[in-house]
Length: 303
Image (cartoon, rainbow, N blue to C red; front, side, top):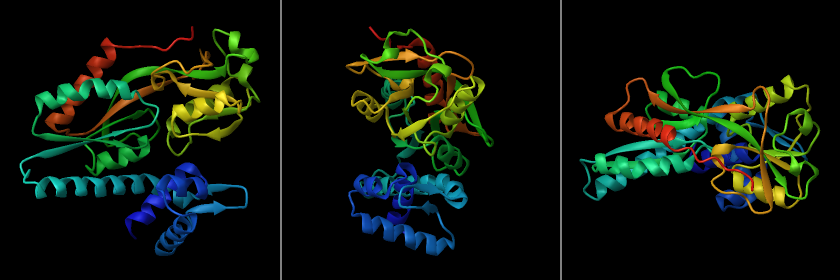
């Protein structure tokens, strides 16, 4: 199997749409479809259920997705190290930092300059990566630190809570619910919702599902997006109400109100992950993240 096959698998798994995956990879849809077929042939099993209306992961595909993320991260690390060696930087070491979508990127950005000052000989490589893939990569030492969301199956690594984040609804200013100061799951029951894909943030999805289940509400997700800006755009276009987490909102989206959800299971823990024996650089970054998260919390509020 080659890199394009793995990239095609990850893109289709996260988009659940061959056309959008092809656009994301800047390749033709037949190229992506052929790559998936070659990978399935090499593995001896189907990765996706396909119908004319829907694409979904098989059990095999869901089980292999974290490994595909970790393998691609390792390939990028190999390329980065090769370039460093070719440039005569053989004494430099690398810290790969995995970060899941919807985590507080501003927190990481505030800590990295301090880390560079303390470890000038270390190359720091931020790597977008779902939490489940981070766990696999940490156990195989493909990455040195991860920032993600609390989920089941966190074993073989160390986890510390960075912050507890509230779920937030993104509502058009003209929507009947826009005047609420808080919203419950029951008030959003049967409402068309837009949120993150399960493949990217299974821990967040499980928490949101629990909130609706406890509230006796019907969770109706009609569309997913891999970042909060895409969700906000769909909300502004009138597609539905968006659900995100407070840390993902680095500004107030124009024309929208952000309303916190209230009730059981309407928060999620953002966590920092390290191997059982982290490097000095990873330990320093973990401590910086924990300290900065405690000192600076900038919640977004609707006007």
